[in-house]
Image (cartoon, rainbow, N blue to C red; front, side, top):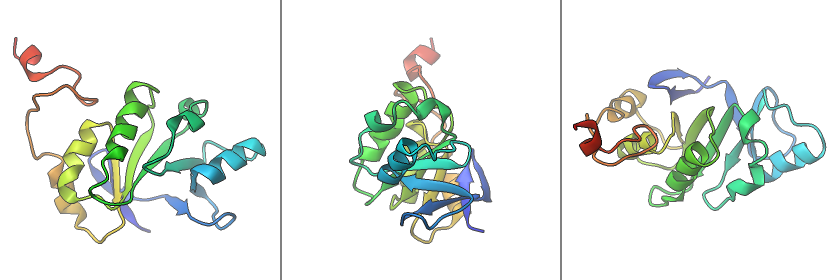
Length: 160
């Protein structure tokens, strides 16, 4: 079983990303199109089905399902594509998503801290990586100046 980081722990990944329609079983993370198709056909079990969003996906398409989803994965096609950061923050702040928010794909180890500030609590890289090293990157900084999902008060308000 593959491993990932979730809630600052290395754990077994019980979910599988289904890239081709009809190829998965168990806990499945479907593409947005496959997810919406399953929902339209009435075949959506939100206990065992999650969605992965491409970096150019519209969150509006899944807005009605966000409260019932256990997991939403956001794909990072390249480490320089920062749109996933915005998707994560919007899911947490505007859509009140409280489940697992997983970063998947091609992001860099040193981006993990910033992803966590945007609300991501799980990380699974496509590239080979050292999970222990990535886990340590979540603690790169002890304080942050700006407000974010993980700390809504800016530093100057916390020190007053």
